[in-house]
Amino acid sequence: MLERKITNTLKMWKNEKNKPCLLIKGARQVGKTYIVSEFAKENYKSYIYINFELMPEYKEIFNGNLDIKTLVMKLELTFPNIPIIPNDTILFLDEIQSCPNARVALKSFALDGRIDVVASGSLLGLYYKEVSSYPVGYERVVTMYPLDFEEFLWGLGVKKEIIANLKTSFDNKLPIDEYINKQFSDYFKLYMIIGGMPKIVADYIENNSMNMVLQNQKSIIDNYISDIAKYADNTDKTKITNTFYSIPVQLAKNNKKFSYVSILDNEKNVGERKYASSLDWLKDAGIVNMCYNLENPEAPLVGNIRLNCFKLYMSDTGLLVSMYENAVQKEILNGNYNINSGAIVENVCAGEIKRKYDYLMYFEKKSKLEIDFILNINGQVTAIEVKSGNNKQAKSLDSIIENYKTVKRYIKLEYDTNIYVDEKGIEHYPLYMIMFI
Image (cartoon, rainbow, N blue to C red; front, side, top):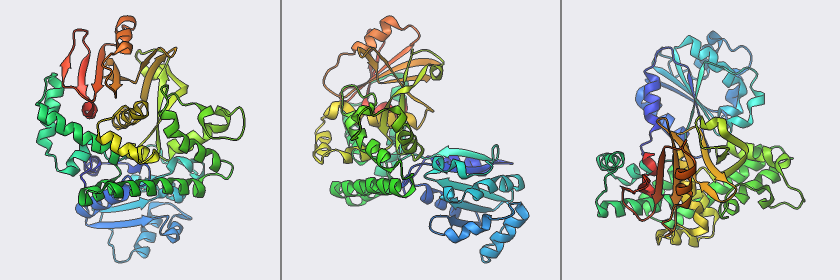
């Protein structure tokens, strides 16, 4: 079993008093069902599981009255062998987007409090119009992502104490042993290729087969396309598919700003009006992360976001790698991080940041100055530059230091370096230390 950080979130939620229902959203195959099921079995005496896609007949439970007395009675009739023990029963409503009335019923469960309820869904944002009344204040939404790099290391058997020692070096800006540095850089290469989809990671740990990794990744890509065909409106299917397949092309450009004209389309004047809904679909499905450009790198950063200017990253970097030709895997293993203009390195860093921050943001000015990521870290506006090649210059960071006094901290992530701070105050870290930012 792969250890996931969200398990601690589930444990803390269980121990709360007067808690809301928990709604876990995330892309397909990030491990939602497995993690919640294991948590339920280990922490409750009674466990009721309903998957509305695999068990559509159970949607009838949530037709008609949704008061708690009626709901409990229906559950007891449907699952006569599972006793409902107050404060020791959990109800897991999987793929809840397929039963909008069940979403409405979360309020009744939360107000009553006898049964703990966890719901999950992969396409929640696509069914919002079908929910007649949202249980505002009675559900807590948590996003589950593919494994981050630290969880990936746990899966490989790296001890938490070793990772903690690296974190201490990061916090104190102290260099680390070169052998250890190389080992973690090699692990990071693997992570970029394999990604964080739990089944793919587990299969690799068991079989050590890159061919199997690639086959599994392409299978997930095929499943995404099938979801588009199954769930998207007929008028949007082709647009969403074209947008999805344009992502590797968009990221391989020197200027990675999302461009509508880069989408494969037979029509002229392709633009935001036609394709905005396609971007929303992919975002709501948890497949992509959007990184917004800033008017200025100053706090509050969110107030400076340009919503119509952004980059589009894949939520899982391993899946992005699989969308390029097969030789890309070998290039990364050989240390060629600059392949496709650093697209893969930027994508993996974006994924690590997105797991900790609400927004991904970057700063570009007239195509001459570009900072890959801008974050507000503990009240300090921080510029982060990701270097994928041998070029050690940091012209954009130099320009930020000289011209933008609102930025207080400068970080440079490089594939072949140790920890140090240069004479300009720029902090240098190995790429894999993105997991500590």
